[in-house]
Length: 89
Image 1 (tube, rainbow, N blue to C red):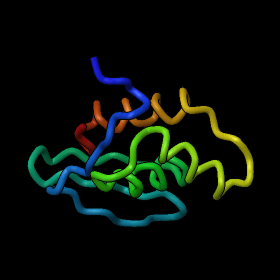
Image 2: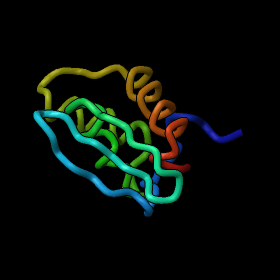
Image 3: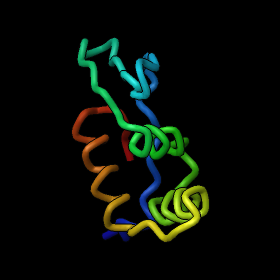
Image 4: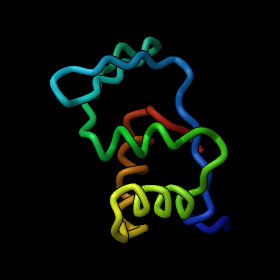
């Protein structure tokens, strides 16, 4: 079984992004589903480029926020993004 912290995610290619009042609305053209993402979740989604692992994303976000971000929190947000079909492993 692959280590969850080494999982690499990529964005769903059928998405359109609009920024509205400090939040990002991500619209899936295939399912007609729209999801509102806060700043942190959107930043994590942007890092899902098919190259960054969960650990990589945690390090990048921690560096950007100048404080440690728990890998479990990152994993939880990634699972939510995956549940909404915004990313795929």
